Amino acid sequence: MSDKPYAVVTGGAGFIGSHAVDLLLARGYRVRAIDNLTGGRELNLAHHGDNQDLIRDFRDIRDIAPDDAAFVGARSVIHFAGIGDIVPSIERPLEYMSVNVQGTAQVLEASRHAGVKKFVYAASSSCYGLADTPTREDHPIRPQYPYALSKYQGEQAAFHWHQVYGLPVNVIRIFNAYGTRSRTSGAYGAVFGVFLRQKIAGEPFTVVGDGTQSRDFLFVTDVAKAFLAAAETDKVGEVWNLGAGNPQTVNHLVELLGGPVVHIPKRPGEPDCTWADTTKIIRDLDWRPEVSFEDGVARMLAQLDYWREAPLWTPDSIASATKIWFDYLGNKEERSR
Image (cartoon, rainbow, N blue to C red):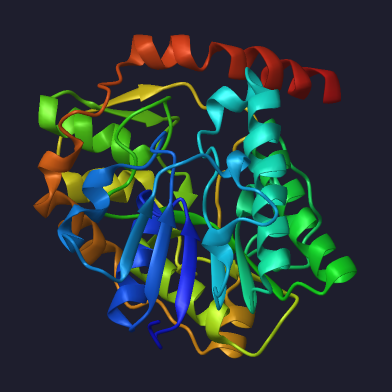
């Protein structure tokens, strides 16, 4: 029996989860990476070879039993698994509720039965909706679409298990994570995956609106470090906002990537700016971002080939993929006037 601490990472073959696995292994943990490979890729863990401290567990979190042996002896569980595509959530809300809420409950219950010492939930800043900036943790919750609602209900479930069963829980609301290994397949989604595939193909970047909208981009290795700090702190029952605290415009991103641009319509229900107030996480966890935006983009460009098999989005295919978004959220804005 190893005397190394043991951690479970759900979504461990995914974008952020695989970086968390890397960090935990580097810090001397044994790690079980649970992932159904819907969004994650085995490639993201391949560099660990046959490392005996890494257990690859490829299954759906909804199949996790309350007495699941995989959780026994775990010091911490870091829960990233879920559906992260925003646009399709309007079309498939039940799937999002099933994975992001019921799936989270399955992981919580297994963690409770195993006596896990710390459960860290990866929440989403989308719960704030069209928020005031910079956004603090006590900002009103106003989810604008089913993805945001499902992630917030998963967060509520985590705190309910803390309140009722005493499971030690912390929550981190991620703003705009970016970096190497970000998603390469699936629905129209995160700007980096879209732009990098367009750059490979020599196609123009599809900039939403005029490109002056800004996002609080935080490089993925800094995200992983925040989650490890939340797992190792003595603090329990906390929620923290996580971003760089330094929003960057889409136009600046395009400048760094280099290439032509075509503009597409701005989508209803999306904020002009996301901006995390990071005062609390810096104070509580002694965490600070280390990778500048410029350096982070350069690191992604250095691994550009990773996105070669990603879908190539064009103005026409984006319009088709987001039609339901405009139909529902556009009508919502009209009704509210």
